[in-house]
Image (cartoon, rainbow, N blue to C red; front, side):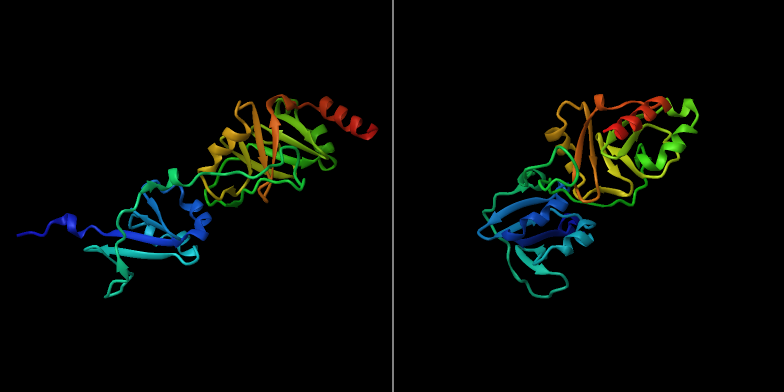
Length: 247
């Protein structure tokens, strides 16, 4: 008689000390994973074969992964069980169990001491750029020599001694480029450490979707309204330069 294939399906469990709960934010988007709490331990189960070999979970301190057999939990390649399966646990999908919380934030300008604690990391997926941040003193001559039809496709605003240009195709100017995600402007090559953070941040800081959140590499942001931008032209740029000289 053929063996029941359902008995060959591996079931993985894991445990983590409750003090290390914050590390689980990096896998919050693994919605198939279930989580439960028992005294000082966080239990997880429901991992796929691909997830149990993902490098990110092995970066968690004191993370222990088990394979479940007949009610017993075995460490990888172990011939004897480490412990019995815990019973009477209340399981919840990880994305619902872990609530996103935000500390006090800076909604005015990069560098102010009060900051939102969000981290950006390298993103291997190439994204088209949509914005450029340039120092005004570095681009005056280039703006003056740019064809009018190219300028008309771009909107811009002033941030301190810099100009932020928004639109495509971008002008060929020195500066830092950005790509867009849910009306966030993120530095090229970077993304949020927790990918599902994007929507939550927009809901909290851009509820009306009437602006942009411009991020720097350190996870600080600047809130900009759509009304802060105007169409770029040589005359508007020169007038801005003059007004800054008078100030």
